[in-house]
Amino acid sequence: MTDLLGNMKRTHTCSQLRDTDIDREVVLMGWVQNRRDHGGVIFIDLRDKEGITQIVFNPVISENVHGKAQEIRNEYVLGIRGKVSARPGDMRNPNMETGAIEILVEELKIFSQAKTPAFQIDERVEASESIRLQYRYLDLRRPQLKKNILDRHRATMAIRNYLDNSGFIDIETPFLTKSTPEGARDYLVPSRVNQGEFYALPQSPQLFKQLLMVAGFDRYYQIVRCFRDEDLRADRQPEFTQIDMELSFVDEHEIMEIAEGLIRNIFKQVLGLDLAPTFPQLTYDEAIDRFGLDRPDLRFGLELCNVSDIVKDTGFKVFANVVKTGGLVKAINAKGCAIFSRKQIDELTDFTAVYKAKGLAWIKIKEDQWQSPIAKFFTDDEKDALAKRLDLEVGDIVFFVADQPKITNEALGQLRNELGRRLELISDDVFEFTWVTEFPLFDYDETEKRYQSLHHPFTAPLESDIDKLSTAPLEIKSRAYDLVLNGIEIGGGSIRIHDSNLQGKVLGCLGIDEAEAREKFGFLLEALASGAPPHGGIAFGLDRLMMILCKEDSIRNVIAFPKTQKATCLLTEAPSKAASAQLQELAIKVSKIEE
Image 1 (tube, rainbow, N blue to C red):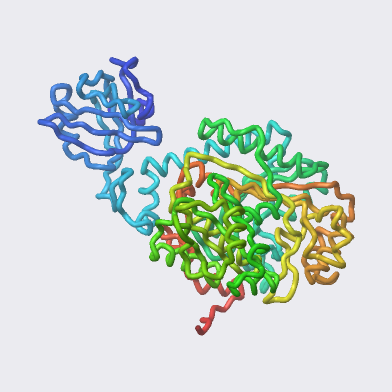
Image 2: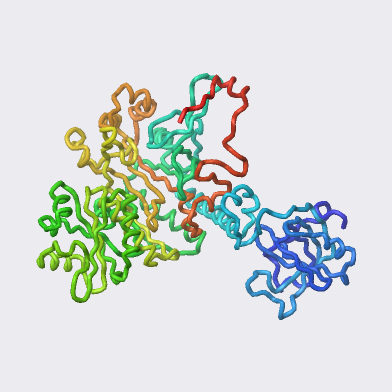
């Protein structure tokens, strides 16, 4: 055979062969993982996307092929033909799927040589993330990243099969669309044909999927790219992927039931895990009260406890004054942690300051006393009440935050998560889901002095709260729901407003008058007035979900070609400057903004 790609086709991948294939003639193709020369016999681990097989170049079998193998180095791309042979008993590798066999090579084709890679292609890579992103095609050869991408493929196939079997239709929606206010900055695309005008890349297909319900498609889904020009972090990217769904003639309970089935199917197909038949539910108010956050991590305890009523008249004026001005005093009992040093307590104090807490009070429960700068301010009755409510025992330390409700809950909720990490109470092998329901419909922006949608402007209020639109907007609960996994929001949705009059009233509460509403959402309002079914939906963040499934700490490790935290691609060096001719065609003039 003179050409492996001509007359001979690859017969197996590098993970398939076993000791049942002894003496079979095979053709393998792949990359050189490593090369070892043992006294004239050359051993090479050949790698493809499925696994690794050991191949052997022995001069006794073919002196010519053995001589050619002398030039092979790591990451060369080879094709080989040879016979499957059993490895000697003491050379078997039980940690490899193909560890019982090796291939005695009779023919070799070197498809391409490779220069020394920028870093070693194995699990123990020591290169920085910036180097790995610059050479992402090399990074993706590493087993863990390759597994992550293959798991992502298995997840998307599980999604498509489940939704197809559930009567959903996969429909694409536009990428070049109209800019609408949805909470983050849009990426704008200039139009050459309509100079001076811009498209926006969609932050989500929200309006289009609602239009599809008005059009009568009943059940829509899409695994879709979305775009947001926002500050980045470990679980954010400027372009990200959603599992997007919308359904007609349903309520929130039916949507949640379908969503749970989808998630159970993904976990079964990717991890082989059987999840609980139903997921627990918390209202937004209960989640905030117990955990401080609307995305509670249920893998551990350390729940928050409101002690405002106990300390409202205490001699410690910081607590008393906060309660009198409508604030909250809440506490966490870190059991057995009275051994915390002052340095550790100061670190936790600095941690809560990031979330605008003005201080972190603490008390250590010792055998014969309460040790704390604030202990002297409490009466015996107040101590007894605190001890009973917080279940205080010798060896505990209790932390307090006193501030306005939003700050108290956020700071103490984040402190709870930090204590969970420091005390090693959190396991990556445990998956705890919960639905959070009945979010407030509106929040109030103190800076802009106006109401804002907590989810988006198309979320329906509870029917029992509609009358409050004109009297008490902040008391209105919405028909919104988030699915939280291990303290991370992996999906969220709502029942939508299908009545154009109600939609107009909600937009009015947001300070959007009829003229502005027609300008921004006229097509949606017109559609809702054309016979809209009751409908709702949900969208899951596929990247975040895969980050958890793959036990990674960044979504960059489950995306083939991610951006950095500065929204740049180190591989392609995007974004880059546009040619002057391109800018001229688009009628764009670039000027520097002075700092």
